[in-house]
Length: 403
Ligand code: ASP
Ligand code: MG
Image (cartoon, rainbow, N blue to C red; front, side):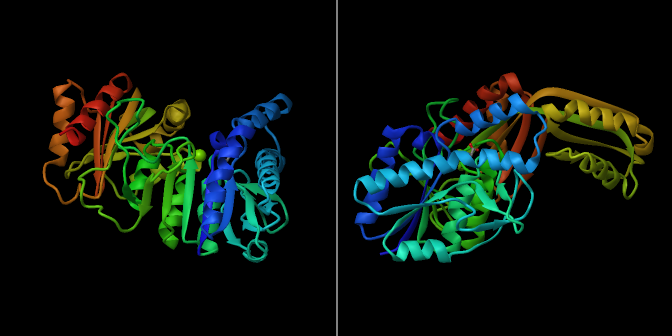
């Protein structure tokens, strides 16, 4: 008999009928003799609806009030689910983030968990209750309600699993696990059985929006096995995210795509200590998220630096650079729009020769030009024109997974 944390996302709890399905997964674990903590999201598109209702009032809400508003979606789900379970004669109790409490810092809309008081949850569990927790929310040390950012219920679930030392955390969603690529791009996408935390972090940050990235970080830090499963399948193995497993079997685990990328090139920047620091400090000061960075090398007096920013940051970034052109001492500032990042991810990349060649061959065979290349131990990323990105993903996926 162990302790299991289960999490059900918005599409899994969208209406009463779906909540019924959710109770089956909960009861299944309870009947096996497990203690169960359940974390839920707001029903369906409730959070989106709350945000658009807020926009009818103001586009610049007080951050504190924004969090008070958006945290309410989850509160509806916990009450309903608890009622449903009690109707079926299973004792359940609902708890909001602040009732537990889950203590966070005071960064509204993007708060981080500082610690979780286990006592309340444990008392209810020991008294024979299923504990139903509202996802994506906590409370700061001044008693203000905080939220974790969109998709943050995953983080509530894994953090609770870590804090309560649960056996595992099952994340139920509308897809049956993590796939080698987006099944909407190619029907050849395969379900991944086991994946390491590192690979999963890369997959999510590179555009595979299955899990909230912070939940994977917490899982990794506290060694919580995370299963991603489908709510809509009775028995689902899903994907296991863990440190162990047969990670070396496949060279790569996934092909991802991230759209709406632009590349900025600063031509002829002085090759002097501190120049790049000044440049990126300037962008950081204006809250511009810079991603891939490539610098030309060699002992020249000048060099070029290229980096990517999201399309919606492009105008702002160009304006800042233009205003600071003299300070940066740059010859020219160029940019290129409508690009996509296409990446392959896998712990096998570093040890297996020819992986990059295979990836580039797939692009070459499809006449696709690469605008930038970067690599890490477990990832190779290229920039391509957005209108060729799906073909690129398909071709690369075929190269590595079709045999
Ligand atoms: N309800 C929140 C959202 O829609 C949190 C979550 O679903 O994880 O972003
Ligand atoms: Mg989600």
